Amino acid sequence: MDIKRVAINAVNETIVMTVVHMDYKGQVAKRINEKMPLATVKGFRKGQVPKDLVEKQYGKSIKQEEVQKVVDLALERFVQSERLNLLGTPLAKENENFDWDAEELTFEYEIGLVPNFEIDLEAKNDIVKYIVTADDKLIDGQVERIQKQFGKAIPQEVVSADSDLTGTFSNEEKGISNTTTISLSTFNKTAADKFIGKKVGDVVTVSTKGLFADDHQLMDYLKVGHDDVHGLDVEVNFTIEAINGAELAELNQELFDKLFGEGKVASLEDLKAKIKEDAEAQFAQQADQKLLLDVQDFLIENTKFDLPAEFLKKWLQTVGEKKLSPEEAEVEYARSEKGLRFQLIEGKAMAQSNIQITFEDLKAFTTNAIKQQMAQFGQTNPTDEEVQGIVARVLSNQEEVKRLSEQVVAEKLLEVFKEKANPVTKEVTYEEFIAASYGE
Image (cartoon, rainbow, N blue to C red; front, top):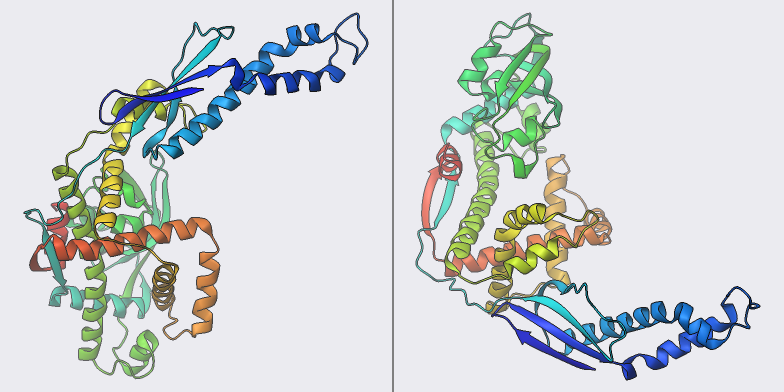
């Protein structure tokens, strides 16, 4: 067999394989011999069919099967021996006039290659690293929410400015149907005004665009997926099922202990300090995520390389349970190109920075995530045995391991980006951060 690479450009090649009779005749003969005792041809008893008739009836299909096996194995070994870094998998070129009776059988496979490129993590940029602070307005609002949450609900006949509403958001087209309780003040003023004076059973229609100060709240109240949050501009119905005012809970030691554990908060000043600490820890995670996304966008925009686009569009038509049309593959490629580019950039950044993920890294990350989740549900002091039991169960799930590994990689890359991208630090309130993030 002869096998070679034919370069088309830096990211596209063709593998040409020439198969001769010696490459497959032994296996074909063996298959024919195995077939003879089982062959049935009219006029002959089973097992007594002459070999030439067996070859005539089964030889062509057996030859095609054995040649394909030879080709598949040779292609796999060639890709490995040449250490080809492929995007997608080899695609056989179609040949309607292929002659299976020829002395030499030639097969061609298109391949797409990972491009060679360099990245400059220290390139000049205008990236901002935000330090998000919890201001008095936010802290006072959270104190009031705590008092309402633990206070006494007072049923109301009609909606007023200080009402809490229980009801269901719905939009059939978008698959939205979620029952929740929400304070009227959570809505923007335009939406809130529509509810004033309404009663139980009334349906109020509002637009999702700018409905809340932070679009992420759509995930909480409407159960909209993260990928659909920003830019969502549809109308939703809210069916009112209950209207309540609130007698605010007294800020006393009993409430503080219920919220944070015995003796950890002893005054309003302590409560505000705790709210500020917890809020700014959460804001820091959001700011880190924005920094990572901003660096990603910068690197994608400023790291130039070609992709085997036409090859990948053809390849997309062949993978998955549902085969795509050329038009569908075009749309899918456009949707996924940015992600593919960053995936390649991410791999290069990891190699340049010598980033490696160990099992201990994964275990430590998972342990911290589990503790945070348990704290959200009031388990602030779990035992190591409890935590490690949960960690072991999580890490026994391959899908979870994959998901968590991606998060560990993102965390390590973020530290590299913070160091090398050298972003400008800017202190802002949460409202200013939201405006900077989403232009709202």
